[in-house]
Length: 416
Image 1 (tube, helix red, strand yellow):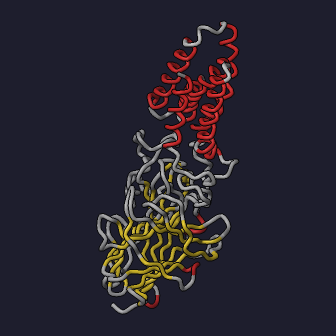
Image 2 (spheres, rainbow, N blue to C red):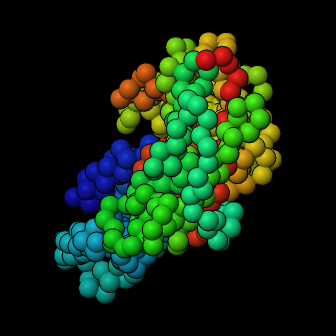
Image 3 (cartoon, rainbow, N blue to C red):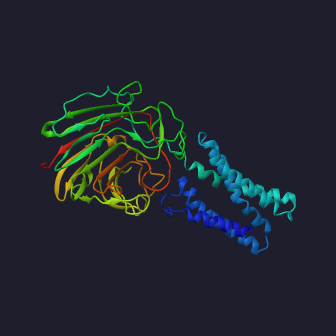
């Protein structure tokens, strides 16, 4: 019974393992919460088999308690690590763990009571594997760097040039060669977690992160200014207040959408003259996503996923991008440049720590580009300073409290 049940547990653990062995380094807690746990499960099976074959029931009994011990310790760790998450989420595995321990303990009545309690003590060696399942999901300290702590003055009215329009929500609509762009420069959270666990249920407050940042009123959390420069260039100067440290899975520092480009291609300033075809991407399975990211090494890399937004990831190009340096993206239609968008504050504020959802050295900041499957006539660029949309899972990452500045320069390059 013990060998069979443990084998089923090991097979179940293996079926959930999407990450390759080397996705996270050995010292990373997520290695132990994923690959390390699967190795441990099969080690337990091997020990149970040895105990059964060698007629050492005490060995089989000790390892048969391991799943129950892990479930109980994981449930307790979750309850105390994420105090605002619904307790039933962690209470269920705890209850299953208790039932497992009671059933297994009672099935070995042939062993002396003292021996059984001694083996229970030995099985407590598996407690760390249960705890790491939860503790590995606790967000790391915030790695974003807000530009300031004070919000600039409210929306400043300005003269918008012909062909451009500034919406009430703070989005700029402007020409891009013979196409057009929409740029939304305010930091917005699509989800948020009160305690850092997977964003499933939240407590509404007046500072709730998922509310669109208000440009006016008593709960104002954003400012925006538009300036017209020489040569027809436009400078959006946006700022968004994050009133408290916020854990989030999906959020957007800037949204860019382009329409009217027949054969769209992009190039990034750090990677020189290399251009990248703008291809459709699917979710949650299908055609792969393409994205750029600022690495901890000081390089900006452009990568391609394997299945939708999931790895393994293949590097397409890279080039240097100093902290505080501008990041530019040039839109092409075929070989003809149409316009250039430059983020002046992205690199100074981005979090470069490794993503708990992606691994493989991929950071939590991202500049994803492509054609969404819902409407392949559009080109979208989704920029995040710290998010876990690339990869798999609902792990969250923190934005530090403060004001995030987002100056976006739009320069025309092609004839309308």
